[in-house]
Amino acid sequence: MRLGKGFQFELYLQGEPLIPGLPDDVALNCLLRLPVECHTACKAVCKRWHFLLGNKERFFTSRKELGFKDPWLFVLAFQKCTGEIEWQVLDLTNFSWHSIPTMPCKDNICPHGISCVSFPSEGALFVCGGMMASDVDSPLDLVFKYEIQKNNWTVMKKMNTARSFFASGVINGMIYVAGGNSADLFELDSAEVMDPAIGNWHPVASMGTNMASYDSAVFNGKLLVTEGWLWPFFVSPRGRVYDPITNTWENMALGLREGWTGSSVVVYGHLFVVSEHERMKLKVYYPDNDSWETTQGPPLPEQICKPFAVNAYDNIIYVIGRYLHVAMGYISKRNETGSSENKWRFSVEWQVIDGPKLSDLTPSTSQVLFA
Image (cartoon, rainbow, N blue to C red; front, side, top):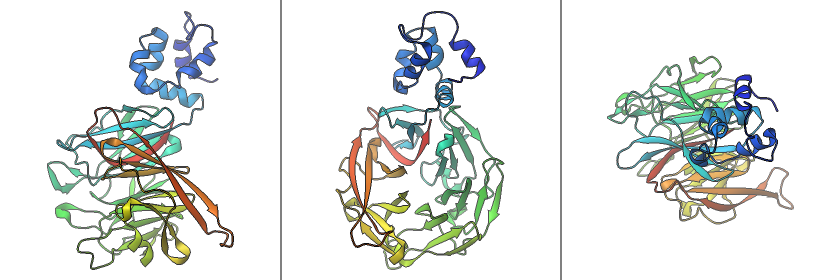
């Protein structure tokens, strides 16, 4: 067991054992598994427990030093009546909720139009852009970084262009943003990239068309951007695909953009969409024939009401609905006899996790981090 010197000195001050009858290293391993929602009560047990559990930074830093790598679902949510935003976190091991500090915003930010990306293994997420709650015609160029081990926010260097309702994604450790709305809801064609290790934003190739983003995904090393279907549905939605290797954009395949009718995730190297239509069934895209197929299994559980926030980890899709109820979709795959080697069939089974007690929150976006 390796601990930071300061922490080790404080934690191992002479006194009563952490848990009577257990060696301190075993007891520490047990305490670091306690749900965060229990910390307020548990830290009153003794001074040593208070030192460990009275500070989220110390708790998560200790977990990192001991090699814990459990998933946590971070949800940016808002009160529907007031528009006030907050971050709620679901412990995906104990299925308990807790909150984190608010973002360091000088002005109230509208819960819509924000883009969020993450580096799960590093326990870090980035919040980019959006718009002011008092003036939706004024997009923002702000960028905030949250680190779970530090349990705090850092203000990063601003994007070159203020934007809302734009595409974002992480490719090879670089953060890309593209399109979106500028002032007076004028659609942008610009795109830019940031290396998180340096923090500076640099322009990349123009999209070639002005477009706000309905949804986006990183698929096969490329950034996919769709504007989604627009009423009255007379014209097929536009879609663009960015290749960071060649720094070029191209049109999205017709079947891909026409069938993209919901929020996307990538699981098993395949693009899935939780459809907002079609009885809210899950469907998967097959690039070989530019087509979508509905996965086997039930539709999204009735407890999960729109609007959604969607994310994924490993073979599990997380769909967060009103009141922050979470549907966990377990994806399984099989290769049918007689099908080509890469022609996988998929099915889904759902499990519902209740949102925080007495919650009247609506999700905006979500990310999975490890700690």
